[in-house]
Amino acid sequence: MDQVQVQYLNKTGNWTTVMMVQNLTPNIQVAMQQTARNHPGCRVRAVDMSGRVVDIL
Image (tube, rainbow, N blue to C red; front, side, top):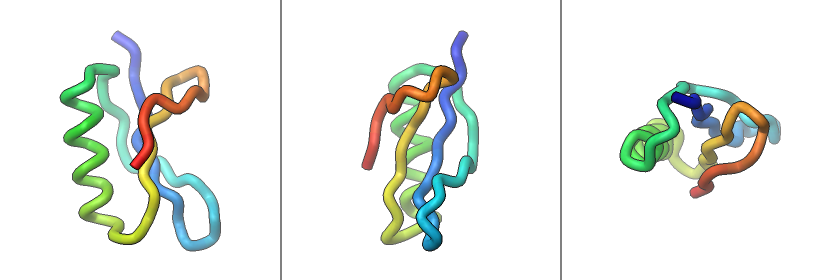
């Protein structure tokens, strides 16, 4: 099963990886929502191992 990195855009403009989850829609959704709650006001995205954006908040 492929992995997806969940990242947020920090104050300096760099994407910071906070967790890796399996590439399953429910897992990605929960991880992104949790990251958004932990980093309010920051953009959140999910990126696959090839660097392609899977989802973004």
